[in-house]
Length: 309
Image 1: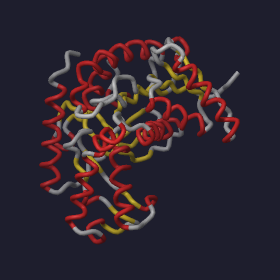
Image 2 (image 1 turned 135 degrees about the vertical axis):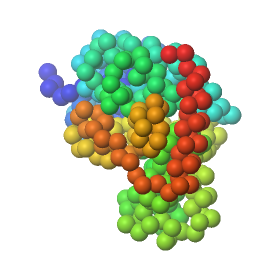
Image 3 (image 1 turned 180 degrees about the vertical axis):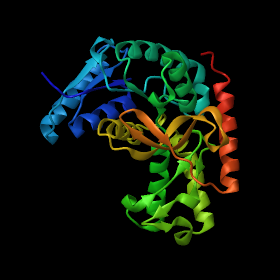
Image 4 (image 1 turned 45 degrees about the vertical axis):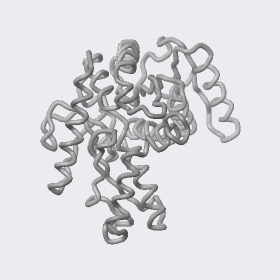
């Protein structure tokens, strides 16, 4: 019998399966992969388990169409919902995915009442509200995955632009997970050197723009949403919670006055540990960055206003 703790990933599509694969390969948790499609989670679980024999981890991924196997999970990652298709904004998915996320949240939280919930489904900020309202859980235990992905995109472009290692890039992207996200250039460094010392304002703005539309760029190329980076980003949040790393990560958190925003899920730097969000960190922002964050909040509030939950 395995003594490892359990993580559930709901949704065995590309993002969910990638998250499960990254977690399995890190070799410290048992993973339950849930999907309504018969055979899909079982097949992907079997495939990930067999990959363990190649790469050298002890596989214990279970695929299921129900929720009994998820009981007692420490962390639950919700990726269920329709992905974007070309021409769709994240917000177009709101009513369809609201129903799915509501249903999944009810079922999964009943089995694991003490878990921490990580929401990945789009439109991300709105789906966090659904999960929080349906679960009735405190805000520190319902968190969205967005900022890590957005900063990963920004960091990638910066590393290419400056010809430096992506490991030395520290980027900050705040706000809603959409075209109005706010890359904070003033807090972005390469090897401790401010980005503005290394790259012209014009090139920085081009990278900022590409980051904000980063998801759409991939949808246009592939005809569906990205999955490798999002799946890995969700797994990184699980790691920080399970290992008690207390890493400072950019996550979507429920704000109650921080950054002058009240009653809304927004992407901000948080300290992520075994209790979920242990602290929301408020950066000193320039006036134009605060204004951009306010605009982003208004865009998120509009989508949240469409919700029935």
